[in-house]
Amino acid sequence: MKLAVITDEISQDFERALTVLEEYNIRSAELRGLWDTNVVDLSEHQIRQAKRLLDDKGISVCCIASPLFKCDLFQSESKPTGPLHLAKERSVSEQMSLLDHCAELADTFGTKLIRVFSFWRKGDLTQDVKHKIIEVLGNAARRAESLGVVICLENEHACYLGTGAETADVLRSINSPALRAVWDPGNAFCAGETPYPDGYEVIKPYLAHIHVKDVDIVDGKHQFVIMGTGRIDYKGQFEALKRDGYTGYISLETHYRPPSGSAEEGSRACLDYLRRVVTDNQ
Image 1 (cartoon, rainbow, N blue to C red):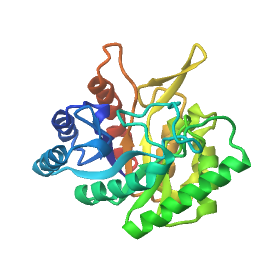
Image 2 (cartoon, helix red, strand yellow):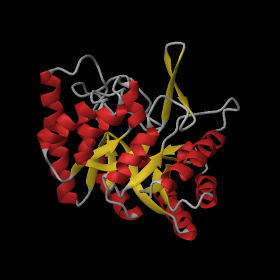
Image 3 (tube, rainbow, N blue to C red):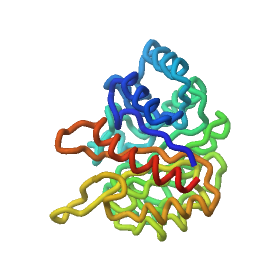
């Protein structure tokens, strides 16, 4: 197991985020927002600048945290039902060309992994909805395989597939080596699943990448908290990952903000926990 961080969880100032990674001896970054711009909307100049900073600091990129398929499944235009993290709203018909662009970004930054989603949740996950998701993501998986990349489906409670069980069901149906899972226990908890052991046990055959955040319930609402202080059994989760031989990245996507509102302070508090616990389970 290796640690990484989605850099905009530290700062939109990409150089500052990489400096914090260096301080914690974390040698890999996940790219989502840089300089108040989503990774898929970076200019050529910004891409070159980001690559130079990474190379200068000797930090690799483990995953392109794209907004692919964070769109309406059926309509050409819709209002988002969750965060887009600076990305432009795009229709489902625009997603394949965006996948091509993400593959180019992955090649530039030296990774094979591209994070994707399962469309804004607009009602129940009916059989018709599930079949349409399988159709669209199946086509995307075939395109990804031809491009030499792996698209990694994140369970996301603002999208149709929020739990490990829902995500595994679709991955099993598509059955492609170019479509794997980003396991996010925090999102699974927000979707009503017990992340460990329930969600993990069904998603683990498809694991390619992991995001971590911790969650509590305060006044009946989900609240992001410092890693290790919430409702998720991360001790059990990390022990299971070690037992099962997981060798990929655990990428911090904390969403926690302390009273000061500082993203960097929130990430530092979580990294202090992660560095200790993940090291203990290596």
